[in-house]
Length: 414
Image (cartoon, rainbow, N blue to C red; front, side):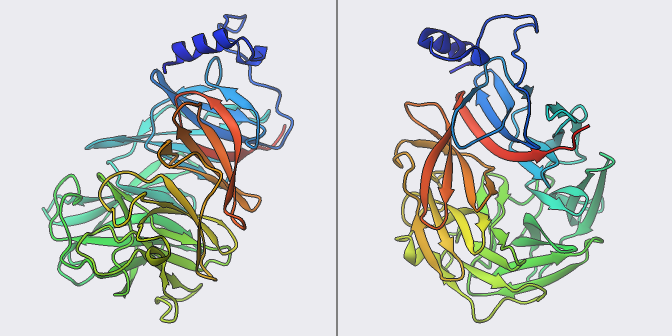
């Protein structure tokens, strides 16, 4: 439904308050945002056939907001990064072209604003995250000397400048193959990344080739100079959620900086299950005493993505049928306790066959996690999941066609 059609529907319903009016007014047809009284705002990214809109609200646990007359129109981003509750970055994927990026923040009155106009990264990206003062993207490339490399785009959140660094990636793990990275996970003064190796490289990355080693998982620990310490284990397959050219992170950490390495077991040739290993805080090895076979508890389903919630709880986005690793259907959510090694599928959500999409960027806070969900026959909603019970409660309704991300920003008052 387009923004124009949504407006028509709202007028026909005739039950919304003036805040959601489609009428023209003294501000040129755009309703002024409400007065901000809290030291924070939730940011919701919603879509229609006409565009993508960033909205702000005091609460995501109930109520309704609309794209009609509200928000800031922006590019249709593939990924969103909320940096330390200060800035929201949209990463716009441009196929083989360099990525575009825009940044948003709250002003001293708590109103959402763009920091700078959209600008370009030096290259495209296949994975992303943040580390130190930088939003980081990475992609496999062919260097000027025709050898394989890893290109890092480092966007300084303070100066809003971009630096590109390229390192060699040939025979990166010693197995003769080229490295691709999956995820940028900040841990102390380092960042962790899953390493997926492939036998060839081209200018667009190595997303179309397959490894000769599907029964190995590699993790790289990078310092600020991009020096890498390699870790390997053979109890899982490589750690990534694959979709098209994207390498979606399968790494997450708990509140004590213990890193959990999940594997979707994406490669159909692997003999390893979809599960998790652990790297204890401060160590540079996989914990030999920890192994979590998630697939056996999930009736054969594989995981796709993982997000930390709180404590030992993590949220998994799962494939909806057993042993499915290639089709893009991920309509099951589950909560795992990585310490107790328990698995609970989330209840209180729309039926699996009704869910059409799950947002790429949920928000974890106050011991729970808020997930954007689009389902048939109703407007998109944010669902609040309690990890202790794995029960979801329907929260904020968004009058739009879709919703892709939710996050939280804070600001300093004047």
